Length: 290
Ligand code: PEP
Ligand code: MN
Image 1 (cartoon, helix red, strand yellow):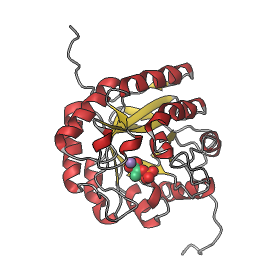
Image 2 (tube, helix red, strand yellow):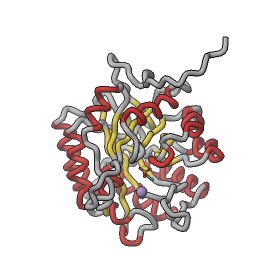
Image 3 (cartoon, protein in one colour):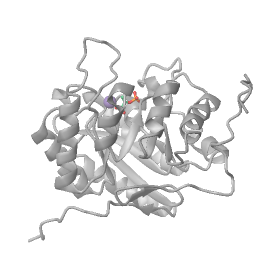
């Protein structure tokens, strides 16, 4: 029997009130009491730099490495990412540090190769309502980190998550990353209320990206702490060795020097909120301290 098409929309798959989903990748767990910090550069720029950033964030206590290979830039003339080469660099950084890798899938034509490298497939804010891309991402058999479009309501965000769940992939991580408002002092406006609202409306883990919301690095820690206090299951932040030289999003990137302090402040709060700080199963073996 053929299902009759209907124009009624209801996001039901995202709502299982009796359950809180924990999503695992490389030993790191987000959700159901486990807290994950995902950190790394906006874009992968070169192998040595990526490795230095990955090593620094691993040593400071990150649970996963982020880094864009395919960059969805506002302008077509801006740096678009190194593409497939960057995927190899991410794989090398994972081998070296043990950090699972989060990277964006921007185009269905890259699905297989992104799926072969990523531990978590990111769907960026600009692609949130690309139904075909959501279905393809779901079918890669990896957890999907879905970012909220800055112009999307929570209903629309959950309907996008339904596209992934309806393909049989239950490992969806929702990410609030700022919405468009009239305010100009930040790049977007972090919708902190979305965190408890999403946690009421769905069983899925909810993380927050304060870097893209703020657009400036001095606000990243206070916004991250606000998100944790509001109930976030994880945080994703951008980190760079020399933010002023970064090929994208330098202004919002924490430096390698700032990052350990950021982690300890966040971790203290997360643990005070009863969360378990999650680390990958293959942690880099730290040199014994002298
Ligand atoms: C990113 O996280 O790399 C990114 C491009 O963010 P967003 O999709 O939220 O703009
Ligand atoms: Mn970025």
